[in-house]
Image 1 (cartoon, one colour):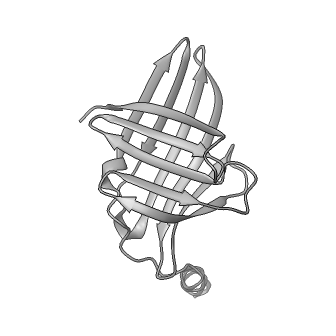
Image 2 (cartoon, helix red, strand yellow):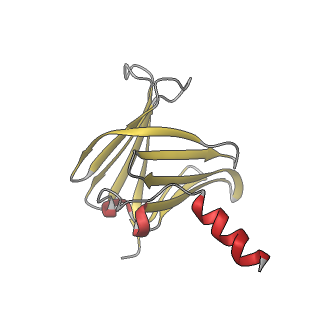
Length: 146
């Protein structure tokens, strides 16, 4: 009796998820390789209003970093949440979405304050920056598989 009650109470604490904006263009396995460095980003579909992602970096064949990612869509907001190194999540609210690009912002975060993903054919680019765009870094990947 305790297990069903516990499961019900845990479920009730989750925010109501809505159908996520169509970010299906982000789904899949993305990878880049250069100078002994490999970067991968993998995104699930947005079924149930939740996209899950993971990023892994390798240097000379050894793991050098990772990040858990998710994009949630509730009745109140659509947000991108990142957990570098598996740490505490930092969330960014969606401020713009087009057919193949999406932008999230969190002006209260030190850096980055803006995260933008864009797809061009089989290339995916993530750009992180401050709100002014003066401090900006881009990461690019190519689609792996179908």
